[in-house]
Image 1 (tube, rainbow, N blue to C red):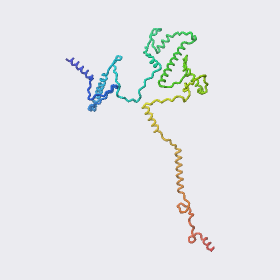
Image 2 (cartoon, helix red, strand yellow):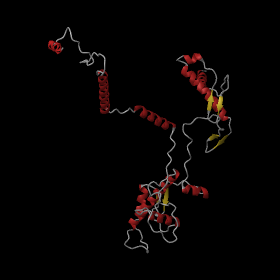
Image 3 (cartoon, one colour):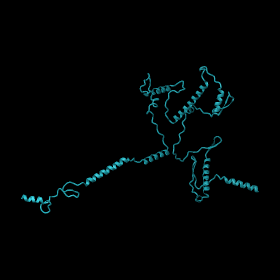
Length: 352
């Protein structure tokens, strides 16, 4: 019996770890299966929220129950098996989520990818190793082991009959390989420029091309014509030559390039740009010329002093003034008492 009780207790503990998938709620959750969003509008238990001991356990159990309800709705959808995995097709989302940036644009296809898509060519995954019949072993497709295997195979290179017998075939093979690598790199950069809509300058004929098309020849002729000191202005025209229509000229003549449109800034970048502009405006202070300010102040003082002198200067005319030194309008004293010059008095008497 003890063994049976131990087994029952063990199974009961295991059952307590895994809660049931059925959850009861007073109000049903607002579920958006397309975005896997569950909104619970039921009231929270205030006792468990306020207590520090049971708060975390209560929130954890609440999140578990809501997640269980969401998963129950997901498993009600039709399922299918893809590569030993059960997959559910989610419906269209109902909730619109805000985005600070636009939806990313899918990466544009290269010229080869467009051609393969039009022709229905499917690219198969290549193996890392391939069997070499000459060396009778597995050789990697790239890496230093591939280079070592090529050296073992090319220990002797036959010189073709149409080639100079003194030609170094090893050097020729190395130069062809480097040209091939450069050509692939140029094509990769062209694909990037074409995807970003960047105008590439025309270079005329490629270096390694044996046969050129009519477009390449016209482009090379227009570039050569515009490469003179006058940018082709005084260059003579060939008989029956057509206008180049600006091929190669826009890259050579300054100011002929098309104006590039600036990319649309992100909301964060625009906000930082506006804040920097405001700080720059507020930090500007008027420049004060100290010499000019001092000269102006001295001039104002001189003008004020001259006005004060004009106001205190004595006025000409009749009347007595406090500041008059002499009074020319005063009458002369009559003869009689108080005369200071008795000689004049006697002289008047004698005349009588």
